[in-house]
Length: 219
Image (cartoon, rainbow, N blue to C red):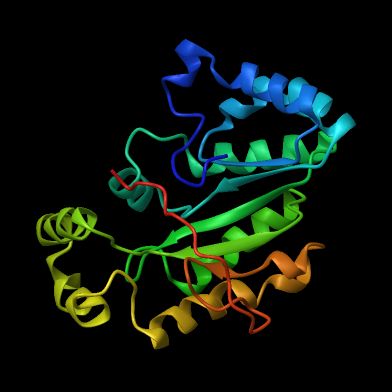
């Protein structure tokens, strides 16, 4: 859950759809995983533990940046990255295997090596069982929206993006490899090392093809 859209958006706090879904997964003993930006999933921790008693379960929280300015510009109205890391720690303390997804990795905005390194450090401190990364990809109308945003907020990056993406949804191979290396260098800190990959149609860090995934909307 969470590959195409976040199941713990703000509206979930009002409508409480997820408890019923967890109950169905528990009752059917269906293996499952969840990806979200929101610590709201802690509300359902006890249900997740009930699922775990019957089948496999895993969670991931996306933490794209620790820079408050970049976070507010690229993910407005979302929970803070540090609150997400606290949720990772709490779930792992409860025994629910939880990892961190550094996503999206956005060239020129949240791809400074020292910033990615700090996320890796804090993920390890939170007990994350795995870490991965997803490079920004720009499909369909998202590309036009993103380029308009750049022209307004970061016009200095427009030429770089025109070169990196052109008419493609994905950045150049060389750029994807560069972003991959930022995440790969911290793989030794995590027990689920085979899960350390730069997803989104790119090569896994062990050289095997990585599964194609849908990127959560930036807007």
